Image (tube, rainbow, N blue to C red; front, side):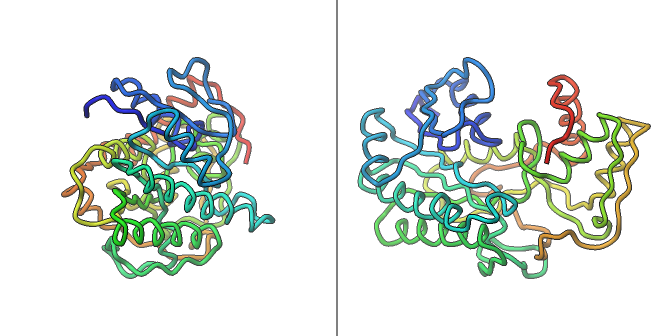
Length: 311
């Protein structure tokens, strides 16, 4: 990828921060936008601790910094946040996204990568779940991601916006601060605390390690215009929490983990996602299977001292 000026929204978040740092390491000029400060000192990119409140704010940001590509990772992440503030979820995930898309179209941005979620699908059809599966979200978070997908794709199809949407499965790994089953198992086990889940066995998920999520975005930022808008992004393994628990016990032999039977409390079914289109068009090939990913996560938690777990 030749040097570019790239705006990363949500640049202090789980995906946005390592993405911004990686792009800087690749020789690009990066502007990060996030109301929260970066999680580490001297991130190497210009970090703007703010939000954009209108199309004009986004357009000014794009023009002042000479932005030619955008990775939109920002938003209220996951259905567990702001549960009692539905409008805040909608304002952040949908209205702000629409404003950004309009500004990007007006500025003729070379590429906008919209980070969506498999939550947009709600209950999925049987595996393998294709990229064009029906969007039938079961919660407001999923609804905002699905609506964002439709808006971005609408701008792409009708107005020529250069956009790619990535629908991520459950992302885990270093830097995750919101509630996450794998995070809870890893951090509590390392802290010597018991782990108790009333669900998990027989309810597999296709977790994706954060490094692979970042790699997918970097591919989508630079690839030739792909033939479709949306791509599933997931890890290579489809496993339940009992498998995760056994991997953790291999690294932490005295870990006290109990995983119950049945699906979790998210309220929707997600079967194995088909990632073949992302492999074909984006060159996406996940490098972290569940064993390698959980092992790397355990190492990071040990070395970073992020204990104890806080939901």
